Each structure stands twice: as C-alpha cells, then as structure tokens.
Image (cartoon, rainbow, N blue to C red; front, side, top):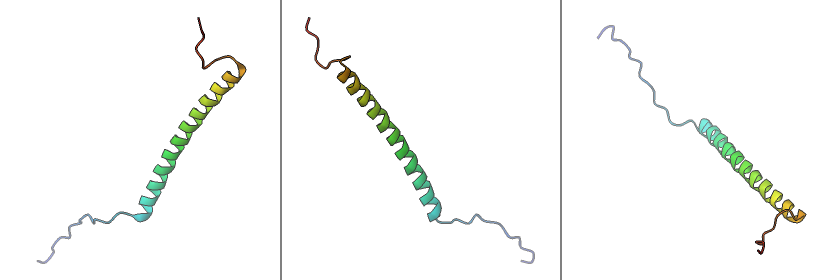
Length: 65
C-alpha cells in the first residue's frame, strides 16, 4: 500500500466544561434578569395601586347605589 492517502476524520470530543459553564451562567443570568424585570414591573403596579388608594382616588369597596 505504497502511497496510501490519509483521510481526515472528524475527531469527536467530549463537552467542553468551561464552555458549558459559560453557557449555563449566561442563560442563568439572562433568565434571572427577565425574572427581576417582571418582579420590578409587578412591584411598580402594586405601589401605584396603593398610592391611588391612599389618595382616595380609588376604593376597594363597591359604591352603593
């Protein structure tokens, strides 16, 4: 077999630990940021509700007719 050609095969490697940690941290921080933004939005709505309630502009009791 003189002059046999070398065939380049794809070398299968295991998962890169550093890459997996970076991807996991990135996804975790993004999900945490979205959750925190949702929490701040709900907090803002609640604060606005109680501000209107203390000013007397709204009431939680239905008005009698």
